[in-house]
Image (cartoon, rainbow, N blue to C red):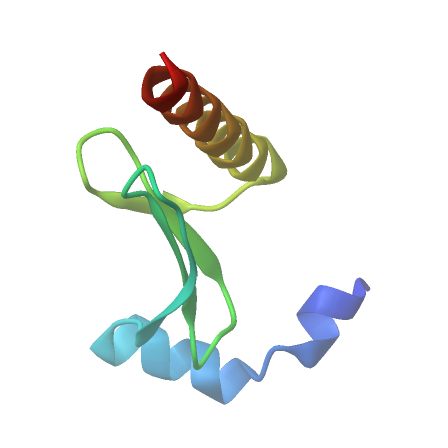
Length: 81
């Protein structure tokens, strides 16, 4: 049994299934991408290209971080030129 599944309360997960998630912003990027976390079940989500929320995976988190670095690099280059 993983640590993640031990810390989640089954009643809170049931509440999310019945009434929906209660999102809080976990991280906001300059590229207008945001990462959210449910305050009840602690699941993490991110926005896809269409603005819909999907489960945050390590791959998607890394993509968000790389896009952020590229965006910052591009803007600093544009300002210095």
